[in-house]
Image 1 (cartoon, helix red, strand yellow):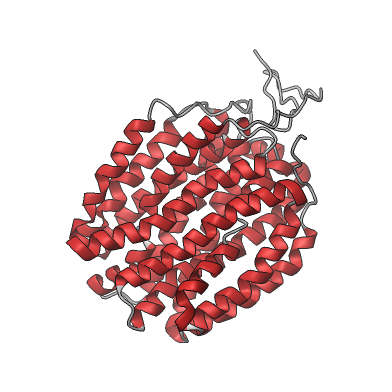
Image 2: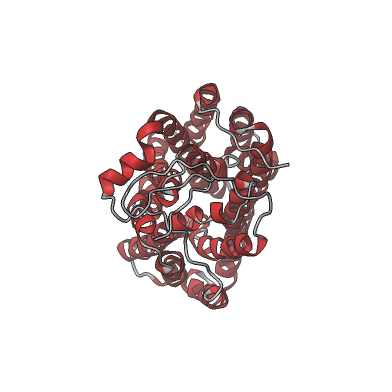
Length: 413
């Protein structure tokens, strides 16, 4: 049996479970653009359907007469099932080489998310959101784990390109779905389904098999020890920052649309704001990945959080500049998303799907579930005051960044 190699060039375990420490050369500087592009488009196809949920929250609230806590619960369930269960998928993806997860996951999202408009009540609405969200959980860990095999020495930037597919989807999706709903009504949201089915059909034969991680003989606990055992302190800090970033970002993306809808903005205008928020994150993710390959991760993290705080504060308290500050807020608060996944794979390269699932899955889902708390507090106080307080947390996060592991990736020159 052939040995398996890490992305950083070190040999993994052979078939008998013995570690080989023979150093190998890291992959060359050339990116496999074809494969990165395929994963980019698959990511876009999956995530554009998941992007439908947040901009439709005002419509759900009106249709089913929901409280803010119930609105927050929809977002929390979506985040929980999209991300919290990802470590289990990551474990399976690291042990079995199959395309089932990267293709079956998007299929669930494409089928069930468009059905939210035909649900007769709140419970069936949650069911459709839940099934579509489970598809996202299936897709992300193995797909993110595949990037290093095709990234060459431009790992952070390649991860950012892959992530751009998701953020671009969340930028285009709100405009797309709100336009469809404004024109044809919420009950006709299912009309968006054929676009995704066609996309998956075109990509079906082109999606590559994930790289085998050589961890078949490890159980779940053994896999956790193998992947994170020696670097757990740095991973824990990275996890905490990822949870807080997600909590703040998702609280804003969930509730600032409700805030401006209540203040008289149309559904389409709210959809444009949400799209600008996500467009900012898409652009900044690419820039952050490019810079991280050159100056390291910590400076990019620190600057992003320090500038996200005032941008999001102004989004709340300067309504005349809402469209501009929606873009800037998303630009800074979402810039570090691909860096979490890239950095955790750099410091824990063994078991890339499981490592990715910790940042994309458990951290993102934990932070997302906390949006229900934001909704409850907003019912007691106001949306603006609760979100305004959260901007202060970003400044605390910037102060924690210097404690992150100092590992960085440098391109081969």
